Image (cartoon, rainbow, N blue to C red; front, side):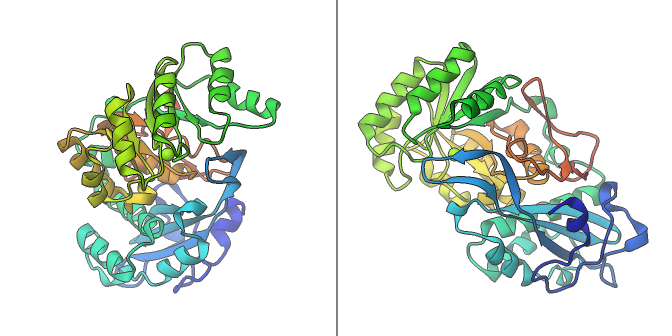
Length: 380
Ligand code: MG
């Protein structure tokens, strides 16, 4: 779906019809007001399929697109943008997200700043639906930041200059030409995330090292190494090849084996699939050195910020990741990036149909648009 269609079509399954609204900067479009009478928040949404630039080869699936839903919350002529991205392994899809969002009535909240009340209300609708909840949370944060006239990193007291380098992701491709193109695209980045666990792990690192002998890499095994001895052998092998950390080496259920690997590994072991929300951070401590926070797992920025604080208090490393997303959700996550050790915020760079302008990668570093309020995005 192109942008024009996105703007004009009616929200699928929305309880309230979408008024055609032009996306101006910060949503202050007086010609087509989308608020309900009485200045109450109004949520609308629209499915939007994210098209991947390259086939994504992961340990447990292979795909060329990711289903998504774009969300907006309007209040008094101000628009907050959010989105849900639903990679298939997380169990959500356009239907489940649309069904959840159809049940969300934000009009009952007279004060949009009651973020905790709104999250409690979202939890009361259904227990899971994390990406759907994240889409509401992101749009709400965008709206609140715009009302306050400040970006979220500033509201949280974070220094945007402390944002880390972001990694760029590559995975194995049977087509040598395609693989060569993927590797060539790594050039502007200072750290590369190598997806493993699909059977060509060492070949992929060796192909990469031929082009970039010194560039830092991190590895995401996506639960692909079933055997603890094999996982440890890979950690040792990777440590000798400039790898910085290993993400989710073993299946998430194998907590004791992961702890065994962690005790012996020269590289930090980071939890991704193992961990979704705040209570999982404490469960990860002891078996993992750090956690990978993603907005689509954490139900958005509110809990992601709490997760980062808790992990720090437990002495753990913090990584900030994303799914394949437009610049909307990726830029929202970037607002938290000054408080993390590593960022993997390349989801927008992996799609060919982005509809927002936001985060930029400058000299390999996450660069937050500091002059924009809210989550820092403008529709393009
Ligand atoms: Mg991962």
